[in-house]
Image 1 (cartoon, rainbow, N blue to C red):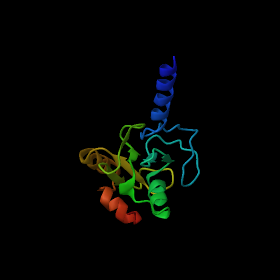
Image 2 (cartoon, one colour):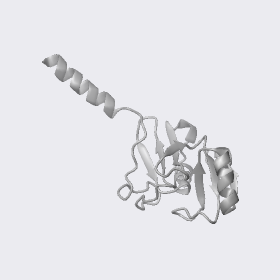
Image 3 (tube, rainbow, N blue to C red):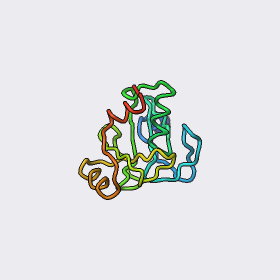
Image 4 (spheres, one colour):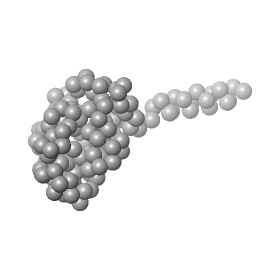
Length: 146
């Protein structure tokens, strides 16, 4: 009996310490930068620290501003995730994403930024909506993030 109780508590402890992205609860979670309620499943983002703390944002620009103002090195984060504009609710790796700036696609904080998981899809969206496509390095440069 003692062994099963010990195993149970070790299991709970280890699961509590896992470094994984957390589900964004739309309509409930608040943005860690602007404090607005996160409602847009096409533009939300998430940072996860090496210790497993999740920071959730309602827009790409909020995440980038948070990284910049809090002097957090993006390379030290366990996960940097953005919603796939083309597949609402699907988080993708921000470093591998392609970013679209289009004034014809409104984002929650008005920076007109969206992300998708392929350059082909990004270019198709820009053909329809106009705008420009760029990568993670250029996004970091625009926001002066380390």
